[in-house]
Image 1 (spheres, each protein chain N blue to C red):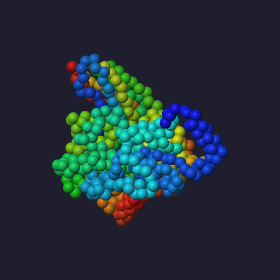
Image 2 (cartoon, helix red, strand yellow; image 1 turned 90 degrees about the vertical axis):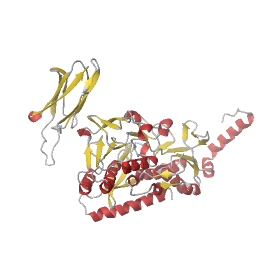
Image 3 (cartoon, rainbow over the protein chains, first blue to last red; image 1 turned 120 degrees about the horizontal axis):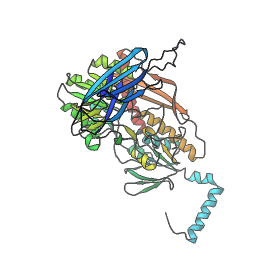
Image 4 (cartoon, rainbow over the protein chains, first blue to last red; image 1 turned 30 degrees about the horizontal axis):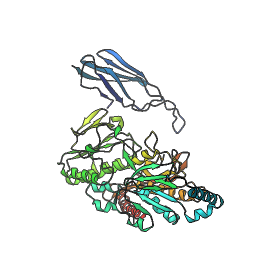
Length: 105
Length: 423
């Protein structure tokens, strides 16, 4: 299970809808040391983006202070039926995508 | 109270004031003080008894609307059909016999200026020190769609009594192959290991009577108390019967649709055959009335005296107080009740209370003859209690004989704490 998303399957045109996302990630800060004194390398998600029918509607930059398994929720206006695409990018070439469709009446 | 000032009582007032200035110790000797305790659970009962034992001259009044107390510890066994509710019930006769005035009314108002508690029938009780031990209330604004009516179809069973029996009847009525969901709130909440104990005991009932059924935990937490012990026991005893959806898997319940008997989480809906919804919690109602609860819904206290940080002369013990490291359990409430009583007796006598050392122990049972325990020691540190050395948890990899022995100890512990408070 890489990512969870919650987008309403239906909405009326002009409705304000809530979108929720959660992705499983350790979000290792890069500031911690192991018992033998070695630095634990940073391993975080650095950016998140959401596109609605190809147009970016939300973007977030993430930093080491953000807890494991980042949960992001935000709002948008339901304009047209179509597709939401989500993308998480992070250290060590981390990349996850997810998508959800909506019917706008 | 508001008698007109006549020459006579004006003169009397002066005389009393003069006497108390001249000889306060003599006045104290005649009346060691009045303490009103609101709430007759483990904390309140333990506190009332400890006050009377410490100084028999202290006038102790216990205000509790229920004539019978129903113990939450071991009520999960009642849900699973392993125990009857009658053995969970305790009365206040022995407290009355010990010289405590037991008032079977609900406290409805508190006047901190006049140091007076009013009960539902309009009677007022003056106090020098007030102890509030109101336990928890449900924070229903935090769970849209859940209310008392919803709890009749989707029981919380988080206050022992009719709700306990309702959940039991629902389990008994459920066909084999059904799903029992348990919605668990974030901390702080009453008795942190208890939802997981409940999951195990329900699984025991299902394995025995309805083996194709399962337990689904929807959890607002990622990690929980005694997690390794529970998870190991679930696997050992019940295989895959118990499934848990943690916070980071979308387990946090955000709303209830009672009409559809549906539990709504952040990422999905569940309509189980039996829904046990444990709502988010806050300090019992009277804490809000008294003004001792803060924005968290709980009551900040001075951990040495249990006196409220918000209202003077009011002490808060048990689940309702912000205890920091000390969990909200019956055992913790008892130790707080006793420590609070000792502090109050000192304060009434004009002495400085000593910092208490609190100990709490709690047993969790996963199946008949299979229990483990958590024993903790706590001391004031800053504004809260911190766990100190000497705490002990049952080992994770232990022979079944140890689990069986701890199950016997759990039963003896229950007998001991109920005798301590009510017997």
